[in-house]
Length: 503
Ligand code: ADP
Image (cartoon, rainbow, N blue to C red; front, top):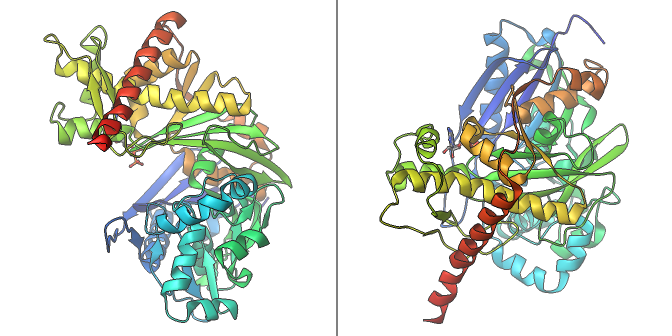
């Protein structure tokens, strides 16, 4: 390693903002910069980004963070990229101009294409890709662009167009069109990639009618991808780490062995468990995915998400007006001895894994004369923990792993009541790290390992710092009783719509 280069630059291209963080050799963030960009909602259910704005915001925070830290490009040993996954961009190979806006992972315009495909091909797709047929993934978004932009399909067949997820797009722009690459984790979210053979799948490409010529070359997560073109950083910086955001977070949390799990508590909650070196195909409607590939070794994960996590607290604040700030939820919940028999199923946008019930609706049950805002707040925080538990329980069943320890990150982990309750319900440790930037840190680690900035994962594990470990304090019997009541409440939340449908 060139010892004059002292830092790693992590680029975290998210759904609402582009961020750049510089990490030092101890894995500590020393500077960060962030820029939000425009969300476009051209029709109900459609979500788009301008690819050029994704690029300009990402490039500007990258340059800004280096200047802010008083460094130059020469001080950066490598760049790691992590990104919003599945978001789909198609651009001209010749000019680098996008032919349509980026279709964002949240976009539902291709839901009916998925309904048709699901009928005959759900099992094949699930086996090959680990995914459930859904508009979420890139395949139908690419198809939509090829079908709706004039002349696109013919041009794609002639090799004139490139498809990429956001990582590919950034690499293309950073290298001024010299490299069209992606990594296995981003590829595994397209619904076109066979996660066992680790290749683009010809049968799926035919099924979705997508020309092979437009796809990027697939690389591992930690290797020399390319060097940036010189104009941006006044030097060539190697890009050496790439992974989708959830995978990068799993790596950043150092869940490096089978059975290790992380949960991110943001607007929604995103869980992932490392399942080792073979894909485990879920029987519980969870997704299987590539966690990372390093030095020719592939690690897999099962993933599940909860739609409304921290968003339930936002609703208490902005919708119900029960609290005035997210932080206040903790003291209010602790002001009562227990939930007073109140359960809240925050199915505000239906229920995700493992229920997958888009018709379920938010339900608060068990209210009496004695119920106060504090009980409802406590029930809301508890609901976040129950939902996470339900996904982890399904993961346990699928993977055969014990999962008795959970590493956490995201905005809502600041709430120690929530973390303690999570530990109680899980019956296992909840570990809150000192550095909550797991996603960016994961990308930095992948890049740093590839250039020898860090020697190996053992070296990384030495620098891991814990803020606090929550251990279960509740008797298992009590936890089971809470869970039983929670399940009854979930049934009610699902029932409600059944009644509605019958009218
Ligand atoms: P995202 O990346 O999805 O925007 P963040 O990781 O920034 O989310 O976390 C923000 C979420 O965490 C919000 O939904 C907010 O309500 C919740 N949150 C933040 N602080 C607390 C807290 N102290 N207690 C409970 N929830 C909180």
